Image (cartoon, rainbow, N blue to C red; front, side, top):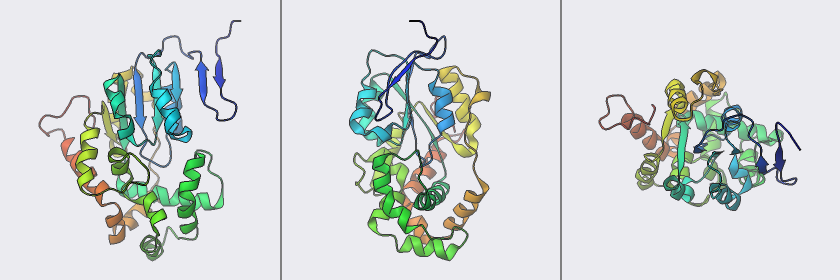
Amino acid sequence: MERTSLMIHDAKSGLLIYRRPQVSNTIPLKIVRLETQLLPMVKFDYYCGRNFQYELSSVERFGHETTLQAFHLNAIQSIYLSGRLLMRNYEEFLDKGFKAIVLLTDPYYELALRIFLLKRMAKTQISFFGDRDKIILAPAAEHFAEVSLENEASLKTALKKAPQSVRNVLVSPVTRQLATTIPEQTVTRGDVATAIDLLSRFAIVGFDTDSLYFQQALSELIGISVDDFPLPPRHSTLEDVAARLRSLHIAELMLEEDLIFDHYVRQAMKPTAPGLPETIAS
């Protein structure tokens, strides 16, 4: 049977089992994009992923065991994975042919985005959250349901009164992703060095405030035109919320490790920084 395209998915989970390449020449690389935002870059992953033989986005929805199986697809040399992973659990695969990429964001902006999505989750279903996410995020969604994003005092009160189950969703998420191996593990200042050490193994690191360099580096790596990458824009409403959070000491305390991490990474990636790897974009 001749078909120009063919995809086989698991009926229950939606997991991709087999896909006939959608392009004439697939990219002969294994890429894992670490997602650090609660809002996934769906369009970006679709655009990049369709150029690979096997692609699985937001892989955290399927759990640790399934994610490991995707990394273990040794017979396939063209793979694109993305997800909000605890990356230390998969660090070994950076020695087995995978190249990691990440687009980082300002910690306050990500906190604003998380609170915004949690408020929305309290009122409606969000399709890109997996079952595990829904369970973990439910207490935080309930906590922020009636918080006013336009009111600094309302934000301050909500953060101060946040129970541990809510704090776990908000406290330094990027450091947690790079330094811990289980979701419940807390982070300390000592974990910042661990997080930076793992990040130094990434092929491409960028910031969403200066995304052109990220696009150019990725274009060079995988051979796709830089003009076509659909990166999500920053939203002025969330920028305003981030500005309010920036003035709150409680927000600074919650983001302490991520703020230290962000500072040192930005310093290391300045054009004048000595010994800057050519594969890292700022």
